[in-house]
Image 1 (cartoon, rainbow, N blue to C red):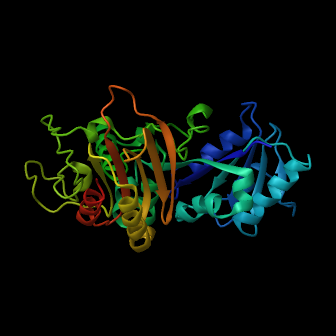
Image 2 (image 1 turned 90 degrees about the vertical axis):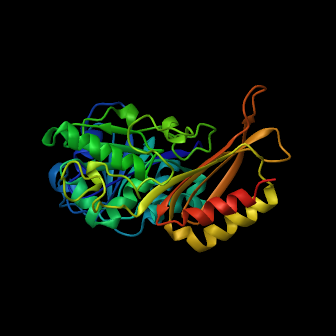
Image 3 (image 1 turned 60 degrees about the horizontal axis):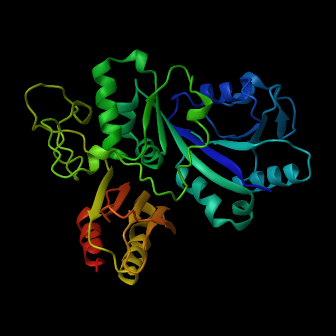
Length: 354
């Protein structure tokens, strides 16, 4: 049986997760989707869509979707769904897991890698994060959970942009890009997202395409606008980072997010043993603060690209395609995390080169 793709939907309270899910559950898109809802959610879908007098955990929707609420833990719910599908009792093609607005998507993502039974049935496709344009600046300033959700995202959907000015939306997108350069951003209205933008994004595939804004990676990229230097955060006077909007003073107090990203790149090859030791050590120490990290590496001893990525303490690598004849063999890695010591990482990586 082929693996069942799973999507994790996260986002702060009121960001529009439920609206998006309702569309998935009611629209005639021809896909059979099982939605797993965290019961502790601030707003249960069932109240609106389902008659919740039933104790049945799994309810079949009119368009072929299935909705179930988690009463136990995620793992047992996933196992139950996979077992029912194998026996032909339930028919669905993919799973969407809605986390509560305060949840950290990390442990949910880890379930798909750490649990062999789950890994044999499911494949984590991507983490989608919804951000509410109207309240995002405040939520990102005040709540670390909101910042972590941005750091984990493979795709960011920005809702309620019609309620704020174009400048505010632009400032928010700029700020999100600083926090997570590898997640594409898209403004959406009322949860109206095309199904193709939600599924089969392959955010967790170890593929050779490193989704980082190319601009973010180019050296000496001062195009006369904000510094896209690797520091991202410390010297940025972009409006969304500032608490007060006095214009003309670029140097007064501004908000410095603890979720930041930085990139390492080098044309020298890595020494596999040294790199493994170093990555093992930092994951051991900083794993809980490392949200997502990904890279395409030039390794000594192989003609193929080495693709690696991780979530928290879990890290995996794979051999990718061969380097092209005229291709510059350059390693690129992006790290997204909470107050990670950039200097220690960059120095350690530098010392792991041949």
